[in-house]
Amino acid sequence: MPNVNGVSASYQHPAMPTDKRAGDMSETLAKFEGLLQRVRSALILLPFVIAPVIFGGWSFTLLLAIAGFLMAREWGNLLSASPREGMALGIAVVLILGFGLLVNPIDAISVLIVGSLAYAAYCLVGGRRLAPIVGGLYYVALPLIAAQFLRLDPLGMFVIGYILLSVWAVDIFAMFSGKLIGGPKLAPIISPKKTWAGLFGGMVGAALAAGMSFLTVVGFGFGDMQFTAIMVIAPLLAICAQAADLFESAIKRRYDVKDSGAIIPGHGGLLDRVDGLIGVLIVALIIVVWRGGASSAALWVW
Image 1 (cartoon, rainbow, N blue to C red):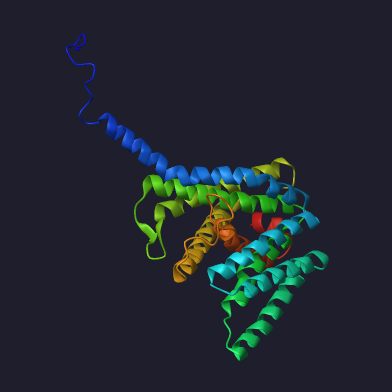
Image 2 (image 1 turned 180 degrees about the vertical axis):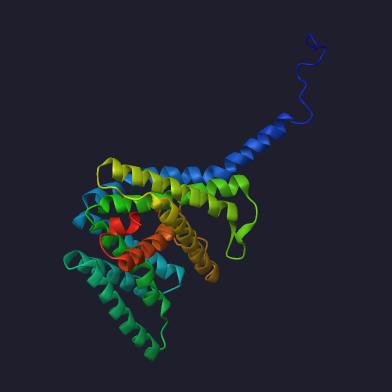
């Protein structure tokens, strides 16, 4: 039936038919469905992470021990190790973290190094694989000890919060910018979905996280900290997070595994969720040991 302009009410503009608009909308929603699932899962898990970070001490070590045991089992599955090796690695991680709580995380790192070297010699003599146990000690236990050490700082709650916020920001901003902008692939053979746009988006997210943490710490009156955390630390953390993500992608591709596990809906395994955090924690520990002094000062004051 024609309207006042003589045009049928059912007329659709030829450049954008209804089914085309609906298809574009469905495609856009499909792109971000994985992100929405991640957000839902993260909101459920967040209270169980935030409380130990705030209280520190044994509660934080307990969180790390539970995560470490699960990560160790996933690492063993990822490398097609025997159940006994995965269990042994999980127990070793828990014992090392317990030693770090009772004695000192730095001494726990010494125990890790000596123990890994001794077991490496045992493997070489017996013709056994090094990666399941020795590799797992450095990939799983070392970043958790780093978190334990960083939390000991008087501002440790803010340091851990800053690192977590940075990794989450890198993950979210990289996903958004990668899907919206696209463009050249970052490492097409290892991870075909990652783009250079995603990396730069992650660096922007890390910069925002650095700015928020800086303003929070200064706002709470903890000193005149330099704003170079954004210029120096943020891009470095973003690159480390993406590099650690690519490292796990390379491991999964090497062993033809899609996910390290299925413990978290929308995330796969725990290792799939914390792969970027693993790299950032190790680099943060190296920076603090290299620069010396308090962890907060080493990371924020340049």
